[in-house]
Each structure stands twice: as structure tokens, then as C-alpha cells.
Image (tube, rainbow, N blue to C red; front, side):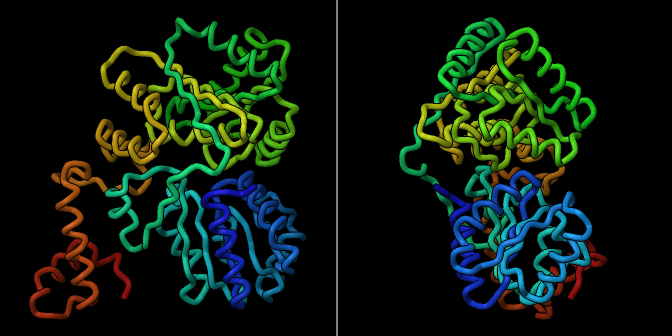
Amino acid sequence: MVHGKTIVSLIAAYKAVKSGYQAAIMVPTAILAQQHLETFKKFLEKYDIKVELLISSIPKKKKEEILEKLASGEIDIIVGTHSLLEENVTFNKLGFVVTDEQHRFGVRQRSTIVSKGNNPDVLVMTATPIPRTLALILYGDLDISIIDELPPNRKKIETYAVTKQLEARVNNFIEKQIKEGRQAYVVCPLVEENEEINAQSVMEMAEKYKNEIFPNYRVEYLHGKMKPKEKEAIMAEFKDGKIQILVSTTVIEVGVDVPNATIMVVENAERFGLAQLHQLRGRVGRGEAQSYCILKYQGNSSVIKQRMKVMQDTNDGFIISEKDLELRGTGEFFGTKQHGLPEFKIANLFTDMEMLKEAQSLACKITDSDALLEKKENALLKQMVDKKFGSRIEI
């Protein structure tokens, strides 16, 4: 069964195509694009809706053929990665755009794909729980809908925060689950903003699991430096149950669906934001079997303990994200500071939210009544906008 935001995008794309338009589904990784393609094809091809894939690893000849069919309107729905943003990707009649995991794409990328159609409808989706109040600031130009219930038959994921002393017990528990035919993820932290180092730490951890801890099981690794084809091959084998333990960076954070994987072990959990831990936890519990998330952490600070307690106490992504914002501040909300969250000199997005909401409401009123700020009462505001953003504004 398909649940949640995927089914929402699927139904909306179906409606767009039946109304005479094309749809574009843009996702951050090739693995996720492939998964969406299979889902869309399975549901829509019986309605004579043509779905195609556009990712960087597609051979040149095949790509040219896809681009031709897209431009002529023979393809109804295109599922792809950043490849959809390339200049030579043109549509016949693009009427609907989906960006999945929006925080992985910049605002400019969203506007690039939108500009390929004539004012198409846009659906922005994310599984990262964003505090409702913060969503107003981030996505103030959009209507916001929230799916906040689990699909039927899904069990609550049991979460345990443990220290180094309990490592042997954790490994015994993983082995017990594997003997029952289940699979496990082991996620290593972002050591720093350096793919080389992250890849290294994943490979070292995988060697440890393979040679020392679980020599009798198949252990493989996944990281961002691998070629797309390698990543896809490993993921396919994990999905087919041929790999028991997958050691990975947060590359698996987004969208990969393996219902048989019931254990998520996060190494050095204290290095992750709560919203990210919640998202990683969501990679398990996708089938009907009971699933578990084990957060291994180091350090005795009260903030670390508080954060681990939040993860153990609740599965509600919105409570978690509010707490994350409160404990870590906006700059680190998504794990790095480059994700487009506004940083203010004086205002605090968490404590000053009521004032920010009021400012946003006033801004909407002004833009509705005087979009170009031509009225006398908006003259000072226009001066400030010109001074601050003049070079970047296009009218």
C-alpha cells in the first residue's frame, strides 16, 4: 500500500493529467526517484498515463528520447532529480509540480522548475516535521496541510537511548531480530561537512560490524561519495532481503521504503538534530512488525540527556521539532546552517513567534493592496526594500 504524502502527490498528478496537463515530480535522490517511478507506474499506467524517469545516470540516447517525448507531450508525468532543472528539459504543457523533501532544494530551484510551465500548481512536500509556527515563516506563500496520523496497522516505534556500556546488549538484540528474518540500519553521524571523512567513518564502521560484531551476516555500506549505480544496487539488495545490516550516512534519511527493516541504530545520536533523528526513525516501522530505534549517545550534558528523553517520550514529529528549535535554535534546525532558514540579528524565531506572525500578516495585507509599494503611506517601506533588496528584485 502507498500512504501519506506519496499518495497525495499521486492523486494530484492523476487529476492534473486528466485535466490535460503534464506533471513533474522532483525528488532529491535517484533511489527515491526510482521508487516513486515504480509506485506511479503501478497505479497509473492502467489509466493510460505515461510515466517516465529522468536522472543523471540515464544513457545519453535514452535521455534524448525522453526529452523529445516530454516536449511533444507524449510523457504525462516525469519523475526526476535535479536533472529536471536542466535548461534542455522542456514541457509541452506543465500544469503541476511536486517538490518532495523541500528542504533539500533551494527556493531558486523550486522557481526554476515552476518557470518551465505557465503558472503551474505547486505541491511542496516534506516528512521533516517543521514546527507549525516556523512553517508559517518558511512557507508563508503556501497553504499548509498536515498529515499527522499513522497509516492503518502501523505500530508505534519503540525508542531507546543507550550509552556505550549497553553496546553488547544492543548487538544481541540486533542478532535476535536478524534471526527472526528482519533487517537493520546503522547510521553514522555527519563527522563534519566533508564527504570524504563521512565515507571513511561509514566504511570503518561497516568493517567493524562485518568482521567483529556480525561476521555471520551480510553487512554492506552506503555513503554519498558512491556512484549512483552502486548506491542503487546496494539499496535494491537490501530491499530484497539479501543484506541483513546496512551501515550508512544520512543518505537513507529520505524516503526509502523497506518494510522488513525493523531496527534503526543511530551511532553518536548526540550529533544529530531531533528533527533528523525523528526522520531517521521513520525509515523503520514501515511494515506491520514491531520496530525499534536505538540511539547510542556519548556525553553527560543535561541538554544531550534532555534531547534523548524527548526522542524516547514522543513519536509526535511536531512536538519533537518544537523542542529541537527551542534547544538548538534555528541555525542548526536541519543539521546544517545552509538550509535557507532565516537568521535574525535580534529576533528569535522561537520566542518571538507571535510578533513574527503579526509582521507576516501585515506584510500580506500590504502586498495584497499595494504590491509595488506605490502608495504614499508605503514610501518609507519602499525605500528600505530598495536599499536592502534592490539588486535582487525583478518586477
